[in-house]
Image (cartoon, rainbow, N blue to C red):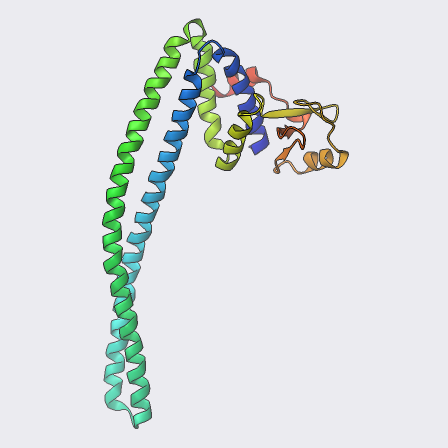
Length: 246
Protein backbone atom coordinates (compact mmCIF):
# COMPACT_ATOMS: atom_id res chain seq x y z
CA UNK A 1 0.00 0.00 0.00
CA UNK A 2 1.23 3.51 -0.79
CA UNK A 3 2.84 5.31 2.13
CA UNK A 4 0.70 8.42 1.64
CA UNK A 5 -2.46 6.31 1.91
CA UNK A 6 -1.17 4.74 5.12
CA UNK A 7 -0.29 8.18 6.50
CA UNK A 8 -3.75 9.46 5.61
CA UNK A 9 -5.32 6.52 7.42
CA UNK A 10 -3.08 7.04 10.45
CA UNK A 11 -4.00 10.73 10.53
CA UNK A 12 -7.71 9.88 10.37
CA UNK A 13 -7.35 7.35 13.18
CA UNK A 14 -5.38 9.81 15.29
CA UNK A 15 -8.08 12.43 14.72
CA UNK A 16 -10.62 10.03 16.21
CA UNK A 17 -8.28 9.19 19.07
CA UNK A 18 -7.68 12.88 19.73
CA UNK A 19 -11.40 13.40 20.18
CA UNK A 20 -11.62 10.44 22.53
CA UNK A 21 -8.49 11.46 24.42
CA UNK A 22 -9.48 15.03 25.16
CA UNK A 23 -10.87 14.00 28.53
CA UNK A 24 -8.08 11.59 29.39
CA UNK A 25 -5.32 14.04 30.31
CA UNK A 26 -1.70 13.19 29.47
CA UNK A 27 -2.07 9.41 29.52
CA UNK A 28 -2.46 9.00 25.73
CA UNK A 29 0.78 10.93 25.18
CA UNK A 30 2.47 8.80 27.83
CA UNK A 31 1.38 5.67 25.98
CA UNK A 32 2.79 7.07 22.72
CA UNK A 33 6.10 7.87 24.38
CA UNK A 34 6.33 4.31 25.68
CA UNK A 35 5.44 3.01 22.21
CA UNK A 36 8.43 4.95 20.90
CA UNK A 37 10.65 3.51 23.64
CA UNK A 38 9.54 -0.02 22.76
CA UNK A 39 10.11 0.60 19.05
CA UNK A 40 13.58 2.09 19.63
CA UNK A 41 14.63 -0.72 21.96
CA UNK A 42 13.30 -3.32 19.53
CA UNK A 43 15.42 -1.78 16.77
CA UNK A 44 18.46 -1.80 19.07
CA UNK A 45 17.95 -5.51 19.83
CA UNK A 46 17.56 -6.31 16.12
CA UNK A 47 20.72 -4.34 15.26
CA UNK A 48 22.76 -6.24 17.87
CA UNK A 49 21.34 -9.57 16.71
CA UNK A 50 22.39 -8.72 13.14
CA UNK A 51 25.89 -7.77 14.30
CA UNK A 52 26.20 -11.14 16.04
CA UNK A 53 24.99 -12.99 12.93
CA UNK A 54 27.52 -11.08 10.82
CA UNK A 55 30.32 -12.08 13.17
CA UNK A 56 29.22 -15.72 13.10
CA UNK A 57 29.25 -15.61 9.30
CA UNK A 58 32.69 -13.99 9.31
CA UNK A 59 34.01 -16.68 11.64
CA UNK A 60 32.69 -19.42 9.36
CA UNK A 61 34.20 -17.95 6.21
CA UNK A 62 37.45 -17.08 7.99
CA UNK A 63 38.11 -20.72 8.92
CA UNK A 64 37.63 -21.73 5.28
CA UNK A 65 39.93 -18.94 4.13
CA UNK A 66 42.59 -19.92 6.67
CA UNK A 67 42.55 -23.50 5.43
CA UNK A 68 42.85 -22.34 1.82
CA UNK A 69 45.81 -20.12 2.72
CA UNK A 70 47.48 -22.96 4.62
CA UNK A 71 47.02 -25.36 1.72
CA UNK A 72 48.46 -22.85 -0.74
CA UNK A 73 51.41 -22.18 1.53
CA UNK A 74 52.10 -25.93 1.77
CA UNK A 75 52.07 -26.28 -2.02
CA UNK A 76 54.45 -23.35 -2.38
CA UNK A 77 56.80 -24.86 0.21
CA UNK A 78 56.96 -28.03 -1.88
CA UNK A 79 57.62 -26.00 -5.02
CA UNK A 80 60.65 -24.37 -3.40
CA UNK A 81 62.54 -27.65 -3.72
CA UNK A 82 61.82 -27.78 -7.45
CA UNK A 83 62.95 -24.28 -8.50
CA UNK A 84 65.71 -23.88 -11.05
CA UNK A 85 67.21 -20.56 -9.93
CA UNK A 86 67.32 -18.03 -7.11
CA UNK A 87 64.84 -15.71 -8.80
CA UNK A 88 62.11 -18.37 -8.73
CA UNK A 89 63.03 -19.26 -5.16
CA UNK A 90 62.81 -15.64 -4.05
CA UNK A 91 59.45 -15.17 -5.82
CA UNK A 92 57.98 -18.20 -4.03
CA UNK A 93 59.43 -17.05 -0.73
CA UNK A 94 57.86 -13.62 -1.15
CA UNK A 95 54.48 -15.15 -1.99
CA UNK A 96 54.68 -17.41 1.08
CA UNK A 97 55.46 -14.41 3.28
CA UNK A 98 52.36 -12.70 1.89
CA UNK A 99 50.25 -15.75 2.69
CA UNK A 100 51.65 -15.86 6.23
CA UNK A 101 50.77 -12.19 6.68
CA UNK A 102 47.23 -12.86 5.49
CA UNK A 103 46.90 -15.81 7.88
CA UNK A 104 48.14 -13.66 10.75
CA UNK A 105 45.63 -10.97 9.82
CA UNK A 106 42.82 -13.54 9.66
CA UNK A 107 43.86 -15.00 13.02
CA UNK A 108 43.68 -11.51 14.50
CA UNK A 109 40.20 -11.02 13.02
CA UNK A 110 39.03 -14.27 14.59
CA UNK A 111 40.59 -13.43 17.96
CA UNK A 112 39.16 -9.92 18.16
CA UNK A 113 35.87 -11.11 16.69
CA UNK A 114 35.46 -13.61 19.50
CA UNK A 115 35.94 -10.89 22.10
CA UNK A 116 33.56 -8.57 20.27
CA UNK A 117 30.94 -11.30 20.04
CA UNK A 118 31.12 -11.85 23.80
CA UNK A 119 30.60 -8.13 24.33
CA UNK A 120 27.70 -8.10 21.87
CA UNK A 121 26.06 -11.06 23.61
CA UNK A 122 26.29 -9.22 26.94
CA UNK A 123 24.89 -6.09 25.28
CA UNK A 124 22.05 -8.11 23.75
CA UNK A 125 21.10 -9.57 27.12
CA UNK A 126 20.95 -6.08 28.63
CA UNK A 127 19.01 -4.70 25.67
CA UNK A 128 16.53 -7.59 25.87
CA UNK A 129 15.96 -6.93 29.58
CA UNK A 130 15.37 -3.25 28.85
CA UNK A 131 12.99 -4.13 26.01
CA UNK A 132 11.02 -6.52 28.22
CA UNK A 133 10.81 -3.83 30.88
CA UNK A 134 9.63 -1.24 28.34
CA UNK A 135 6.97 -3.63 27.00
CA UNK A 136 5.74 -4.30 30.53
CA UNK A 137 5.46 -0.57 31.28
CA UNK A 138 3.69 0.03 27.97
CA UNK A 139 1.20 -2.73 28.73
CA UNK A 140 0.51 -1.18 32.15
CA UNK A 141 -0.04 2.28 30.67
CA UNK A 142 -2.29 0.89 27.96
CA UNK A 143 -4.30 -0.88 30.63
CA UNK A 144 -4.61 2.36 32.59
CA UNK A 145 -5.73 4.14 29.45
CA UNK A 146 -8.39 1.55 28.79
CA UNK A 147 -9.59 1.68 32.40
CA UNK A 148 -9.85 5.46 32.39
CA UNK A 149 -11.68 5.56 29.10
CA UNK A 150 -14.91 4.43 30.72
CA UNK A 151 -17.78 4.49 28.23
CA UNK A 152 -15.29 5.21 25.45
CA UNK A 153 -13.51 1.92 26.07
CA UNK A 154 -14.80 -0.03 23.08
CA UNK A 155 -14.19 2.81 20.62
CA UNK A 156 -10.78 3.48 22.08
CA UNK A 157 -9.74 -0.17 21.81
CA UNK A 158 -10.75 -0.22 18.15
CA UNK A 159 -8.66 2.78 17.23
CA UNK A 160 -5.67 1.80 19.38
CA UNK A 161 -5.65 -1.63 17.76
CA UNK A 162 -5.94 -0.11 14.29
CA UNK A 163 -3.08 2.27 15.04
CA UNK A 164 -0.94 -0.67 16.12
CA UNK A 165 -1.55 -2.29 12.75
CA UNK A 166 -0.90 0.84 10.71
CA UNK A 167 2.32 2.15 12.29
CA UNK A 168 4.56 -0.88 11.48
CA UNK A 169 3.60 -0.56 7.79
CA UNK A 170 4.86 3.03 7.61
CA UNK A 171 8.50 3.84 6.91
CA UNK A 172 10.25 4.78 10.18
CA UNK A 173 11.52 8.11 8.83
CA UNK A 174 8.03 9.06 7.60
CA UNK A 175 6.43 8.06 10.89
CA UNK A 176 9.00 10.16 12.75
CA UNK A 177 8.30 13.13 10.49
CA UNK A 178 4.56 12.61 10.95
CA UNK A 179 4.92 12.70 14.73
CA UNK A 180 7.12 15.81 14.47
CA UNK A 181 4.46 17.64 12.46
CA UNK A 182 1.86 16.52 15.00
CA UNK A 183 3.68 18.55 17.62
CA UNK A 184 2.72 21.66 15.65
CA UNK A 185 -0.55 20.66 14.00
CA UNK A 186 -3.12 18.24 15.33
CA UNK A 187 -3.84 17.16 11.75
CA UNK A 188 -0.44 16.33 10.28
CA UNK A 189 -1.76 14.88 7.02
CA UNK A 190 -4.48 16.74 5.13
CA UNK A 191 -6.12 16.52 1.69
CA UNK A 192 -6.07 19.09 -1.05
CA UNK A 193 -9.33 21.05 -1.26
CA UNK A 194 -9.98 23.32 -4.23
CA UNK A 195 -6.26 23.30 -5.05
CA UNK A 196 -5.41 24.45 -1.52
CA UNK A 197 -4.03 22.93 1.66
CA UNK A 198 -7.08 22.09 3.77
CA UNK A 199 -5.02 22.67 6.89
CA UNK A 200 -4.00 26.31 6.39
CA UNK A 201 -5.97 27.11 3.18
CA UNK A 202 -2.84 28.21 1.31
CA UNK A 203 -2.98 27.76 -2.46
CA UNK A 204 -0.84 24.97 -3.85
CA UNK A 205 0.93 25.62 -7.22
CA UNK A 206 -0.61 23.80 -10.19
CA UNK A 207 2.72 22.15 -11.00
CA UNK A 208 2.92 20.70 -7.49
CA UNK A 209 -0.63 19.36 -7.77
CA UNK A 210 0.18 17.64 -11.06
CA UNK A 211 3.28 16.07 -9.52
CA UNK A 212 1.21 14.81 -6.59
CA UNK A 213 -1.28 13.15 -8.93
CA UNK A 214 1.32 11.37 -11.04
CA UNK A 215 3.98 10.59 -8.43
CA UNK A 216 2.06 8.84 -5.69
CA UNK A 217 5.15 7.40 -4.00
CA UNK A 218 6.66 10.80 -3.18
CA UNK A 219 5.61 12.71 -0.06
CA UNK A 220 4.64 16.36 -0.58
CA UNK A 221 4.18 19.00 2.11
CA UNK A 222 2.54 22.41 2.26
CA UNK A 223 5.22 25.08 1.92
CA UNK A 224 3.27 27.34 4.28
CA UNK A 225 2.31 25.12 7.23
CA UNK A 226 4.47 22.03 6.68
CA UNK A 227 1.59 19.54 6.76
CA UNK A 228 1.81 16.43 4.58
CA UNK A 229 -0.58 16.68 1.64
CA UNK A 230 -2.52 14.07 -0.29
CA UNK A 231 -4.89 14.21 -3.26
CA UNK A 232 -8.62 14.21 -2.67
CA UNK A 233 -9.00 10.81 -4.34
CA UNK A 234 -7.03 9.31 -1.43
CA UNK A 235 -9.78 10.45 0.93
CA UNK A 236 -10.09 8.22 3.96
CA UNK A 237 -13.38 6.96 5.38
CA UNK A 238 -12.42 6.05 8.94
CA UNK A 239 -15.44 3.79 9.42
CA UNK A 240 -14.40 1.77 6.35
CA UNK A 241 -10.80 1.57 7.58
CA UNK A 242 -11.94 0.31 10.99
CA UNK A 243 -14.25 -2.29 9.48
CA UNK A 244 -11.52 -3.51 7.17
CA UNK A 245 -8.74 -3.73 9.75
CA UNK A 246 -10.17 -4.33 13.21
